[in-house]
Length: 334
Image 1 (cartoon, rainbow, N blue to C red):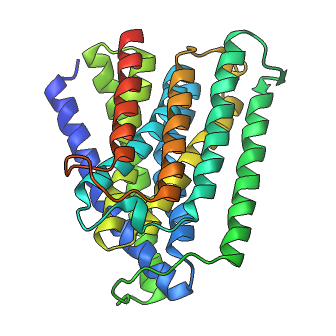
Image 2 (image 1 turned 90 degrees about the vertical axis):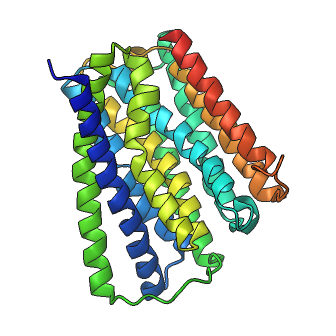
Image 3 (image 1 turned 60 degrees about the horizontal axis):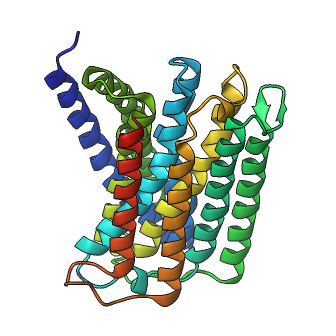
């Protein structure tokens, strides 16, 4: 059996590769936005969000087709959504130049709202699946078709909004790269993230086995954390260069794509509808993510600036509290 120390070293190496590539990815994304005229919020929502969510996609598909562990697949997706929203709280705490919610553009409210719809639908699917009430077409649940439909409507709506109401431009240094160099760098950074992201969940599952953790606990907390490292690195890199809209768009867009991954996992899981084969405790994670998304919406609308005890805004503290609450629920269940 592989020593625990060696497994931890592999984990740190993977996380380091993804962190470095994630920071580079955000810089190339900012350059592409400036050189092509695309807003950073749209680049964050589509380009960065899709690439940084690929580890969740690969992990979920391998979990249902190789490991036959649907709880890990579902826990990874929903746990990543909760972790992504918790990243907003961390950014707000360490970004001392001002409140993240006050400086970010208001257009992210729509993507956060669609996140609530998708997460609520996923949580409802888990509860109905546990009761055998969710209809299916073959081995695929109708809920997955609903998730796909909501996602497509979200992308179409956000695109129309972007065309009619372009997001504001953030004042950052002009890019020194050519478009070709930026695209090549973006592609290379994406390859590193995807490659390391494929390895990282494998290391995480192995480490979890050595530690004796259960599938639901591992999927929601541990695997979700390691597959969310690209979002953390990319978002922090975007904040460092002053691209707050791209950072926020990356996190909210990743949540939209992450929930869509459930539909892919359901199709790939040939044993039957995936929502009927998982623990109902995943619904708690889905609804926790809904509450956290609602807090983000309220914060973007009210734009709180005052920090409680000089640490963070009330909304960020609420996000941290909900994340810890969900972690406690998963720990007790596990």
